[in-house]
Image 1 (cartoon, rainbow, N blue to C red):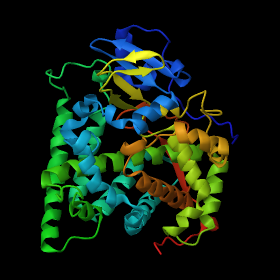
Image 2 (image 1 turned 30 degrees about the vertical axis):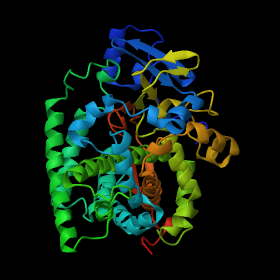
Image 3 (image 1 turned 120 degrees about the vertical axis):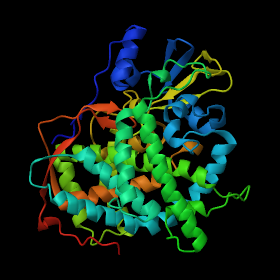
Length: 464
């Protein structure tokens, strides 16, 4: 396929619409409620009831918010209000000293050495996925978002709690989370119509119920692990590492209640975002047969799926990076300024909502060459690497960069390699339409056809 392949992109709304029309479009999908000008504008102002929001693509402003002065731009209460029933006071929604304390405890678990330790569990999950997909690899359409969700959830449970997705509690959490995902968007209309704090944050009844059931199950897993740690029988996995790490400043551990909050975001971020990224990557490879064959050949040139061999899969990594550029799992982030600012000559009053969109900045027409084209080879050029330093933020940036970014890159490259090694992946006649829920998903799923690749890329699946 031509290197100028343009994958699906949501249709933008008209440049000028009424507030009512904007809200109606927003309720259906965040992407289609935004005008096309956001793919070329450095900043846009939205004046709506109760407040103003500023959509920023200017790399200098993005750098100011995320890197230079992050304490002046904490996460917006909007996000906390939308996700609080599930995430509580997890590291994803907290700010200030509470957030800093949480990161001091969590970050050591995701350092390079620890990722090497949990890598065998990732391979086991990949082997399980290949075995499961072999049963449907007969050339008929398979809905890959559902499959990638199960793969990602299996990896999280194996690396976090040393249990497979087939474990009874793990399976219940996975099923309940699928119910939650269908009812809870990343942002609601409240994201653009900020209400006074005294007005209750409304959530769908099913969302609240799913959240309560998930947290009950996670509480059981967490309490069991605390008991194992106390008895000296806990496995050496990510959960044990986090639960036994003391804050170097205060000397305190996470309480059981705090740990449930953190486990909830580990599952949300580690499962939902990875599932989104993997499904879109597989779709892009199905559409670009040349890129898929190059991945297959690269995988055939290594003898084992080992931690050290991942560094040899350079093109596969570039495929995944390009998929993250075109389909960043978290499409938008919202910050709130705590002091008066000057952005591009405009006064930004305290309490304004600052919207940063990886979706738009990573497709920005004034920053990227052929921004909507799928081209993994762009990552070999100095021009792209220079642009990426200021306009590639699939994991955010600065102090609040995703703590699991390294985990996600290892997981993504490994899963792509294992699946392409096992299967030839082909498109169907159904073109997926990107929409923003908790992550960037396809409106009606991503359907692909799988067939066994055969012995031409024979590779021992081992953790050696």
